[in-house]
Image (cartoon, rainbow, N blue to C red; front, side, top):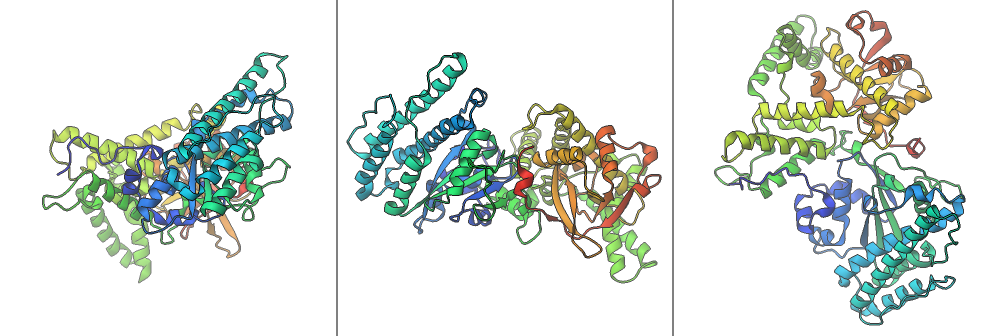
Length: 599
């Protein structure tokens, strides 16, 4: 019996989880295997796709619990960019890029070295006992060498055991980070501020040699996990790229991004290149490709573990299956089945063989929704059932958890302390509908966006609302192909439209994919609307069998004016503006580094 006060779907920050908590919730080794190799890797995904959780289980304490019989070949050093202060605006006062590069490289080196030293402080066993003295000598030597041409006196670092020296080194790092911040601040406030005369801690003189030590003496490669790499200032991003371009075998960088990594340029002006300098892994699209890595199955495993940890069990003590915990709307399913049987009889008089099944499959949900509309009851369509909820989350695990958390809380208030073994369909629907409404309402709000052009975001909001209405009209039409959730452009978009589409992709409102052209030559790029918004427009999420093909002018009209007027229903007056195509399974497009550089 579960603890009545515990919600199995409490939202947690991955970096705050203990090793036991993180490994207890982890169930996605396929992703881990793809990024655990000794290659620098950029891990892309929208907010809530599991990038930070992936970084959490890469750390030593989690690796020991996941693989107790295996000696780890790497030591992961986690660096959360958002937890660091970079004084971005103040750095702009330096007129020379060379000035900024030197200052920023020293700062970034110190910040990452501090994270490594904190690991050693908490887990001195990451360095074998017979290597303690060698590490102390190397660290003290490298740290002291930074003061060789500095007017600042070198620090006094103890000569005791590893724990004592590491504490001294952490203090030195904190002092030098503050010295850099003070210099930047004084340069801003005082025009006659003297030139920087402090020590410089560069990659080749500090971080690199320490990584070499771990590789040569300890036998592990250092993995530097740079979480939220988009939030690095541009100058720090250039520095990081420069380090990556060195291809140092002892230092591997794993960088998570949300598609707005600022630049791929290095200090020399060249660009790091895939796959020579790094590989890419796109979490957001990996589980939407349907190639054996089922996103629905992943969520089922996550739910099962959460329910098990919360003690949500049946009377016989077995853990409640997620399919049972989130049941379908039985009456709605019965009515849909009736529509399906009626269509089978109807189409059997017109088609034969597979054509009957195909048309029934394509039109069942459309006909059911049309019946609801005729009864003025379209609002009664219920989004419920585990698979439906999983698909609605659109590949964002966090969105599923947020909705499930709200469902459980709402069910708890209704049951007055009873053990919750399932969430009623009405509660499921209300939660996902409210979540979709909030998401739609926030699209045009630029305040929490990474790119904050309010005018552009208002256009993105109009475009998405226009597409939602368009797809709804298509679903309720009597066309042969009715279920569409994506569109393709018949010609290249303008720069303005391309910018709007990139904005939508960057925040997870669109996915960019492709489908083979009917002509058999090449592929057609598709822009797929996020499934999370389906409840706003009463769209069917069971499958997306087609896409709309249209000119860029039509999409620009939606972005500028919003939904088409009713007289411009796509099933009538506007049909020549759109061509509906049956789509094979959509394959989602890996990101092109050139497309990702922030505009």
